[in-house]
Image (cartoon, rainbow, N blue to C red; front, side, top):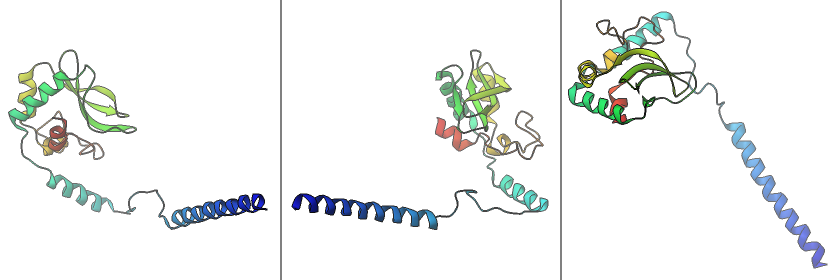
Length: 174
């Protein structure tokens, strides 16, 4: 008799536990907000978007990288394998600007799909040229807003300040 009752009781306990866990998971899923979009949608006017762009632009630092940081950046890039370097975003599609070591020096380029460098936007073959250029850069100039800095400057609102190099990204790399 115990040989019949014990397996039935064990089966009932197992079914109760599975049912309780399933019910708990179903409630969590039911009460969970939708995963997409992961941010509130806005219906902003063009003027509102321009205002937001200007607000973000005005928050960018104008503090220059300086020669010490630029020299450290060059040396760290030279220690990387050819084809590797400073890639700060690793995701699908456009990943912003990267600095990639080449056989001849370093290039600034757009990165696609987390690791595919695009054509060179600018290239430096010597440490002095690289340090001279990057020591005068700031978050503001690297964002693409400054028309006095033609290497980074763009009129394209999507491309401007979109995953560009920043001081904190460079410092994290160093």
